[in-house]
Image 1: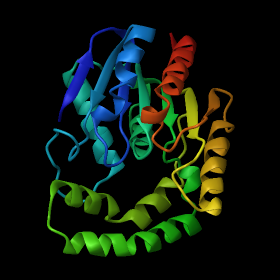
Image 2: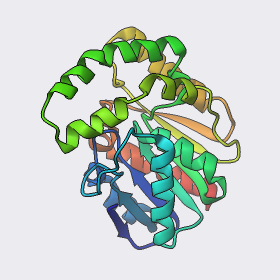
Image 3: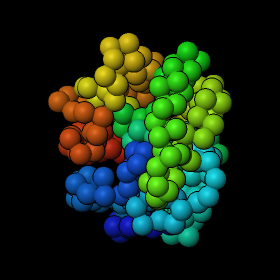
Length: 239
């Protein structure tokens, strides 16, 4: 797995990109955070993304979290981590925080996949919507990208039915950033996405909610300043 490290003090800020993206998504955010916070900045590519090796079999957040934990251990970062996780990486953040709560000082979830969104009806709807895309991918030439997409689609329904039941460790503070546009074009799905972000943020007193105005789902690209400010504010709580 490929890691990029900017030296600095703790907490270390770990940048985890959205689905189909790699550490280049943080190209503007990473140097800004280094300048703002003086923290160690760690950006990495999950297995199958960027310059990291592929991992065979279905994609699972628990496996990705275990990969991240092993990589951070190799880097000597065994505690005092702030996770900054976009979109799909929210699922990795949940798994990491639940399995290693002693290593996580806080998190900034950037328009992230949250359990509250994946109701049984919404998950069934997403599975149905993805059926044609999955069939098309199976017929397409096998490439690194198509294999990764198929790995993420494998078992999507049961995986997200289980994810819907997960809770975040109560002692870990979180900043929640929701995009103005959301990743969904239909009003119903967009409202459910916004409501899920709000419900998660309002479920504990150590969580805050920020809206990234004038931003698509690609908040790290559209509004890196919002990400930087959210991280900076969170650090004031945990340092």
